[in-house]
Image (cartoon, rainbow, N blue to C red):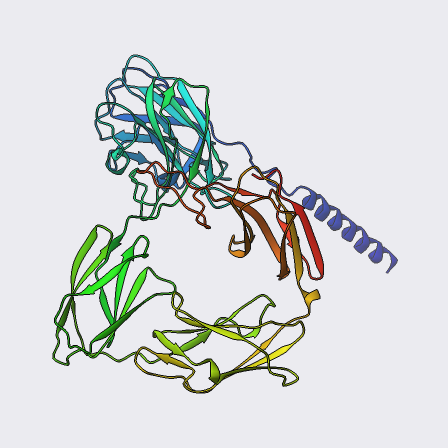
Length: 538
């Protein structure tokens, strides 16, 4: 027995030893590869001159893949869409083939900047901003222009912003950016705010930046943001340019109207609606009446009408604004009529500085304040005033609100009358105010050199929380009753003194009004005062 026990013990020790040795011997695969691919040669060679080939092949030291090349590849000067083909796409290879189908410009330096589209096959380490350059002339242009992009209203600029140079020659005019591709182009891609336009020839240029939604190198005011340098850019230059990107308000244009309900036609439009006028040109009864309201969310003017002859099959309208006029015909269909539907801006909690509003989908034409009452939680009547807000099509109710209080608002029938004579039923609303210590308070100091300014508090989405308008220096600017959250402070320099921020316009050579931010994000906490001096704005 003893010998058998010793035998089994030896066998067990040997097996465990073998297992441990085998375990220690498993390959780990080593450290991950962090080395990006590198070019080893190109046919034709880089920086070739008198280039007249139709194919370029670029070889790398390992297998590579091409990723997101439609967005990453920047060819300057641009080659028209369909003017080149790149292989491979979607598979790995040790080379890239570029087939050029377009006719290249003579005596021109071309650069193919691949951004971060070339990655190795295994770890996808990018070959950062690899560029292949050649010239159809006898030398390589080597001049550069540099700068940075900022946004007119947002804290950070857009990603993938195109920066373009248009040569100022006999064919150039202000509308060139709408219909011609640029002479040179670069892109900030997804991680840069600074840009560099390289391999330029000497000359005078117009510099324009676009957030080019269609990626077609043409400015579309309806979708694209634009920025530009006002003066001519003369190359060579030592200047570092800052371009402010903004979204234009397009020129006014009416779109085809559509009947939405039995007695309402929606007139869509582009551009500002102020002073837009809708005139009916059809013969209508003497008791025909109409009223217009703005859609609260869309660029639409609602045309409400009543007492139309039943046999009417169409209506003729003219939409006008200033010198603009456009005629439209609207076919009239038998549709369901709109009924008055009321909504409120607060349910439950209301801040002490908030105003209660009751909005209607149909036009409000009359209010009866005598049918409205407000009581606090002790059933004591609360004084209030009301206003018919025609711009927002709402009944606005104003009253002083105390902390930690409850208010019962009762609106009896016929308090609100709409365009069609409909009235409300009895409405009851409960509103509650929190204790003042549940809010944070902000005290800002601004001693800037320019006035007037708008001093604003915005949330992390840059949505407006509170603002004050300053026409002259003041000791401080106080913003009470701010819900706990992270906020930013910004100052808008109201150059035209109209009380709001105004964007730019390229053709009118108007830059957007300047907006500067306090450099840090600020946390608002309950029962806490935030005190900041708005200096070192950026």
